[in-house]
Each structure stands twice: as C-alpha cells, then as structure tokens.
Length: 238
Image (cartoon, rainbow, N blue to C red; front, side, top):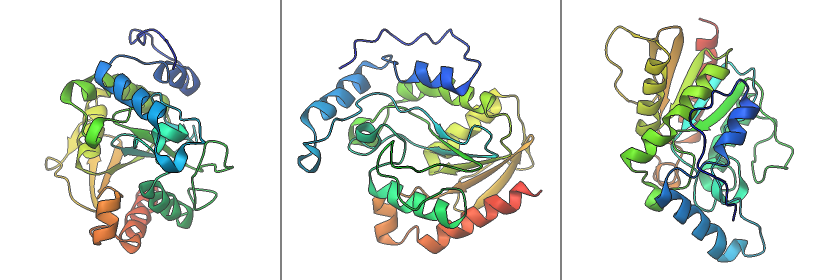
C-alpha cells in the first residue's frame, strides 16, 4: 500500500484534478486507513484475482455538471475495490441504471474505472471518501472529509441542483451549502424522499439511498428513483 503522507488540508486546489490528487493520498483517519487497506489486502473471494484500489475515492463525472450527486461513503468491495464511487456494487448497479435512463450516464452499468462510462451534466461525490467499517463513519471522520466536499462544490461552478442520497448525505450537503454561504429559503430542510428545498442559488433534492437493503425491500424502487431524477431535471429549468 501507498505510504503517502498525511494529506495537506491547508492546500487550496484550483481544479478538480488537483483536488482529487490530494484526496487519493489522504491518510488523515487512522481507523479508515487501516480498514480500507486490510480489505484491499484480504479481498473478497469473488475478487481474489483483482487488484483493489484501497485508497480514498475522489469525486468523478462531468466537471461542467449542473447536477451534483452526494452519497455516503464507498463500499468496502465496491468503490474501495474499483476506485470509483458507486462502482462495482449493487447500489451502483441500481443508481447508474437510473442515471442512464435519465440521460446522465452513457451506459447503465458501472463496473470499473476503465469501463467506458462517462457522465453528462452530473458529478458524483461522497461525504466520506474511504470505506468505513460496517458502513458507519465516525463524526470525526465526517469532519475530516468535510473540506473535500466543500472543495467539490466550490470547483463545480455550474452546479444548480444537489441530489442527496440518504439522510447522512443530505445533512452533509446542507453543511457544504452552508459553508459556501448559502441560506435556506423558507422552512428548515427535513429529509424525505423526493423532497426539494431552495438553499441560496441551489436546489437541494433528497432521495432514499440506493442501498441493497432499500432496493430489495422496496423502500426505493426504480420508478421512485426515476421520479426523483425527473424532478432533478425539472429543477434545472427553474
């Protein structure tokens, strides 16, 4: 594994490329570093022949995107394996199929960083950039990653709509918007599925997270996700 130094959080990257190069070398959170690298060393039986990424996951997509999609954290054998957010796991299978139907993704599958997929008008980030044990980042780990989410928003200069996948991503997106000096127009935002708020110059839309638990139990269906993305597109015209 890489012996990269602690990430230089005092740096102010001027491009997404610079930001992502800082993110992938980050070693701020000892617990997350230990876990992500152990998972990459031991591997899952189905992926024993694959080289795991085992590092923080940068954002990715269209740098001129008007839609910013925020998730929770990479999966241990998904993003932590493939090196791309929502790639190589059931959540990604569900999400990218919906993004493809809505015209944001060039294909309905996302299996690796070199699978030919590209995004149009959408960029994806995570509130925490390393796979956490039990999918549960600690408060201090959210705090350590917060500057990266803030930097994504600052550098994505064309964003008009923020789509938060799940309550935790919803809270993280609101913090990023607040850090950017945006204020809530109207009632205080409360998480719900397919709910929209105006926060400064941004439209914030929330959705249930496309986790395997949510999609298998029917809490989130393909039709429900399509409705959310239709609302995203409608808000781009407001």
